[in-house]
Figure 1 (cartoon, rainbow, N blue to C red):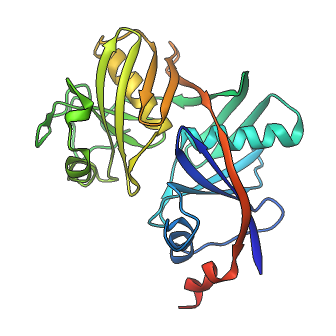
Figure 2 (cartoon, one colour; figure 1 turned 60 degrees about the vertical axis):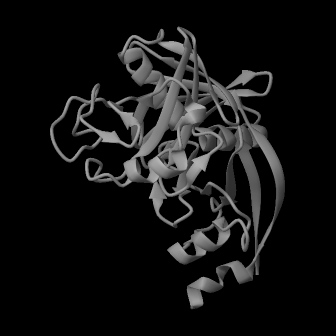
Length: 278
């Protein structure tokens, strides 16, 4: 038995995309971990399974490298949207996720835009372990302090720093991710304001660690910067893997525009499904 897959990425944030629209594909935690393993499997930041949807054009299920399920992923949404647009010849796709419906459009010149939905700013919507001002969290970890909390399909903590390159994100990232303030853990971003319209950031993703890009983290950084009046409500945000154009609309929705790429396609060998039998 083999199973076809496509390897895609958005600014280096990479995904193994499996198409289960024609038949159910039930992956257990061990199987998802095996596929995501960069030495023994295909390797990816997230595993994406496409399923039928009654509310949109496709349901996108997102699995983290530890096998757990994630709510939203902006870069993956662009990748999936580009794949479906190529199939159907349309320039608009609605992707259903655990976090809700995400509308994606072809922005031209190899770019795709996604309406990532509303940013949630209250402490219960993040969620936090207790009531707190989400614009200035009472949290300090190592050299990082005073973050902004945002939920854009998943929880984020955004720290503004003078130099993102000077932050030992590999050390402080997991400490913030697992801090007791975040019952569902948190994605961790450090952001450096370059101008009113430009931000440089790096990100530590829940379970995945440091990644080259994270779309929902870029959304969170845009919202956090605008809330603190450090930038306008739109900006170019540069991550380690490249640049996304972000806009926080007046209705609370966050728009993200950026490129996608297909790395290769192949078939998963049945040996990768062996953990189910262990």
